[in-house]
Length: 98
Image (cartoon, rainbow, N blue to C red; front, side):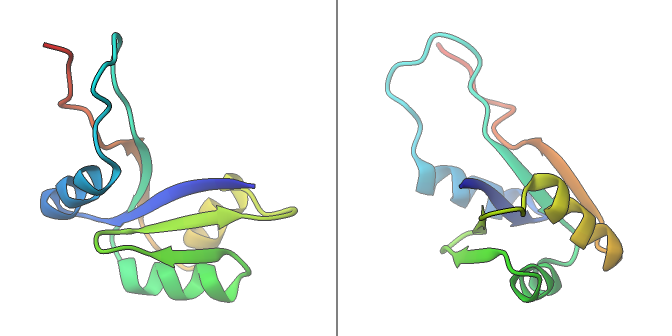
């Protein structure tokens, strides 16, 4: 089973989600958190759930779980088919080890 974050556009939600995850105390390299960021968040949750994906809602964003034959490619295809604009990207792009 795989999992990925699904977030709406917006810096505030991204920051809240990263706070939820917590930042490791010690890391030596670049720190990345990959997520799918969508333009129509509520519709995304509905169509993914209706397509068989497990949706876990959090205070900020959601976690989408892949089970069986569903995977990231299938998830992105569902979004595309439903005309939901998405971007698969690093949401922790500003982190660095000081």
